[in-house]
Length: 126
Image (cartoon, rainbow, N blue to C red; front, side, top):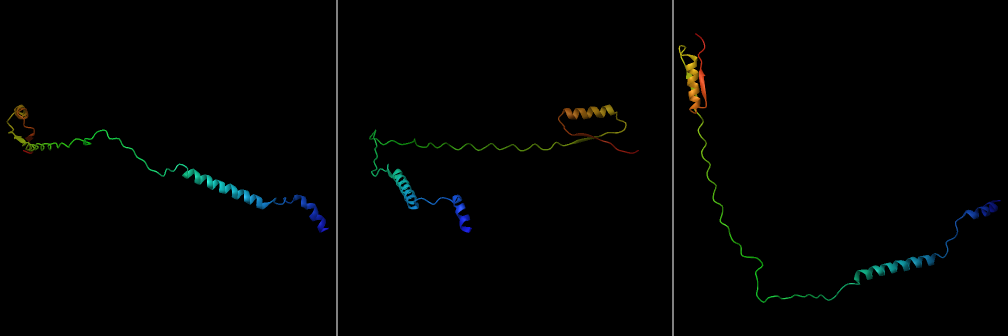
């Protein structure tokens, strides 16, 4: 019985490899052709002789750029003026008998004269 079961299953086995040496030879030939084509593609346009041409237009030697002209240094900056002194404050102290309007007019006159800090001193108590 085992032989009969094996014979029935032979139809499901993969077919044998046909001529493996021919396939290897064909792959080797394809690779050799590829390497040869690449080698020829790299070296087909190599020029072994180097040539150069130059035309001389004038026998006189000319400079490439004019001579450098040195510019004088800029003048030193002007010194900054010293800051103005701080304004002196003016303090007004008046007697009780002086009218308030007179004190206010005195303060106004000082401010118009350019005094920026004008103050009024007040005594507290009796």
